[in-house]
Length: 234
Image (cartoon, one colour):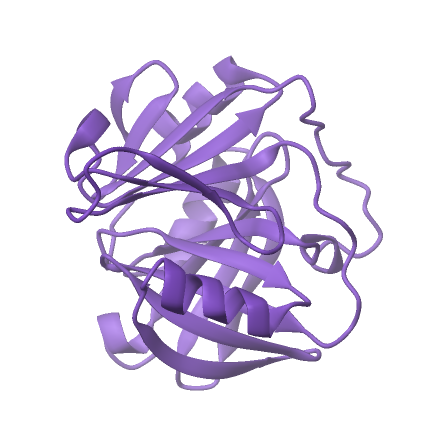
């Protein structure tokens, strides 16, 4: 996988935008970057996250409650923190601030609760070409992805009537990997039998994106962003 950016972004959905902005902007002290309308009654507030972007998607329509398993916690390296500080945001998403370099985390670590650790080992090693650090722990660029079995985790159904609508629920719902060629990566992943979420589509002059799903059905956006790779091919 040819990365266009060595940091993985994190996408959250919420109905409580004022509380979430106060928490991440004032308490966690992440720098606000910009607001993007993304359609379907959703506006995306973007915060800098040590090279990654925290994308807080505010839905005007009520969202389903948090779903067990999946993207379950975010660890953020913070040189101002002398010891790990566990926290919960206003929606109950778990995160922690940890001293820089602790557990080898110099940027962020995304923690996933899964049904089948062996399937995720194969997925992150072979499909996403992650660097294996240890059992259940991989690096994509500078971002660490770790996973462990979670009895509460449930695999999504491949027969969902509206796949993309199912992504919208309270909580951490997807990650974004920035690549140099969205279509090429999508074809490669499909040829390996990876679960498709959505075929590639173009977002104006901003990006070319597709969606894939991990072995449990958690969403991963594959993005070719013009600001990183140059103009999007027509």
